[in-house]
Image 1 (cartoon, rainbow, N blue to C red):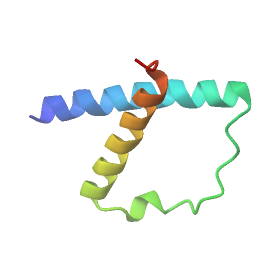
Image 2: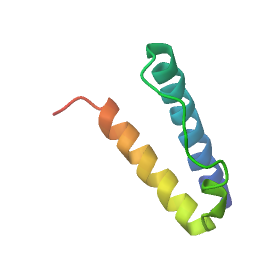
Image 3: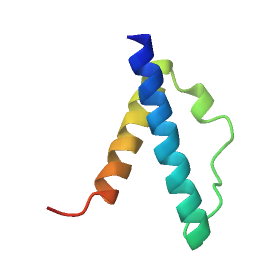
Image 4: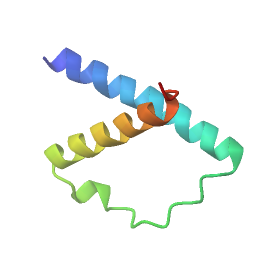
Length: 66
């Protein structure tokens, strides 16, 4: 089970990194003004759910409408 979690985390990281690079290159990602420690205050469960939601939204936006 831990291996699949690590695989999933690696996949999230690759996709998010690619997305961020593309957004910065296009100039459409304004600098974040959020408090630096905001994500650190999330519980592990909340962080996992947030990561899953962000990843799902990223994939939804990249997938052409069918």
